[in-house]
Image 1 (cartoon, rainbow, N blue to C red):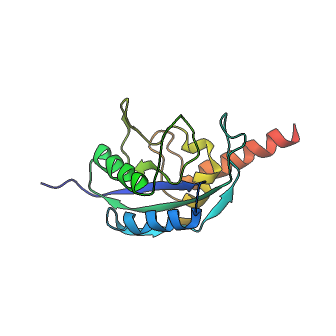
Image 2 (tube, helix red, strand yellow):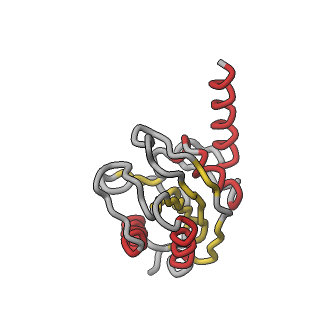
Length: 165
């Protein structure tokens, strides 16, 4: 018996080469992995985090669709798509031609050395939440019970408080 399809969210990013072409390639490939996929618009963002210094800007987007695949199987397919666009991993947070992150798969919570679903840092990343909110604002994070819309509002509120402090 096949698994029941789950509403699945994938975040896309690129900061090397033809960023637009890399994201369009990924979206086309995701159409073969996800049923009824929808893609957000693209947003241009500054790199963030410890390895951000000197990195080129990112182009980010999200795709939401339905998948009956096991999470590990879907992640392996996402890595194949990255590899096809020349993704290399010389060090953690290295610049990349294409980055595909499995963000949510319905209400699944998975924690293994190789995979965490929901993605462990998506709640802190506007470049993930904003494109997701464009597509699926009512998608719920099974860990917090909050919708993507609520997570984005919470993040924006937190940033506003920090800016005024």
